[in-house]
Image 1 (cartoon, rainbow, N blue to C red):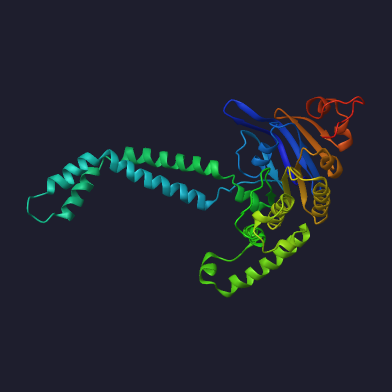
Image 2 (spheres, rainbow, N blue to C red):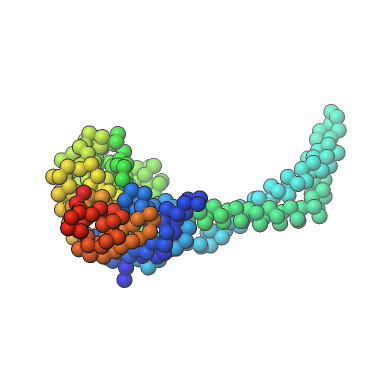
Length: 345
């Protein structure tokens, strides 16, 4: 059984096909790399998998199910409520002129108390027989609009995160003015059970869970090798340690799948070697890894399988050795050398 199944995925932005009919699968406990030239659609695939983009066509399944908000009775009730509210507003809007004339102007007498009950009766009589059509239209429009909004928002990063998918970004996204520890604690949000009122009132459950979260965060920072910077601001870390902190924050979510977007970008050779060892250790902890990377030493050194994209289409997939010798890959991405093999970048 595959953990992540990307099946015939297509993503269009206007008339541009960023991804075209891409199929990739990731099995549990694998390290799979997604490579290709800049603009090949790699990050777009990541964004669809993590709920940032809605696919134009195709499916992305995680653990055998489509990662999206389920349509349940609460959703149906919400749609109906929006429909009723819209129906009332439209019925009033269509009849507002006659309502004002009959209920307000018709019952107003200069320097006399306004007869509110009489005005309400007049309004009811005015609406009688004139509200059914606009209310029906409003009800349908309200439900259709609310359903369109729900349809667009049923895929969201928090849904993917709670399902067990965590990711890092090509450009480091940390809370620079927060400590290293607090950056990791933020990543634990999907795991915390404390209700809002527990936190607001600072009840014992809040403090107990806070202590457990801090203990777990320290263990994660020790695992990635930056626990010595526990109380430093994130902005004061070296570039390589900031990359490790972003990975630590993703691991704090206890993911089944960790998606890394160019984690070795900007690293020196020593940091790159350390990163490769860290990714192997992550896999040993039972976390599957899907990786975007341009650094061929990293890709060839840790990948079980590699999928290659070019202009939004998958042109090759296989083991590092198979991809290394594929003519399409050599021509489209890696270039040619005298031996016809892959040139390291």
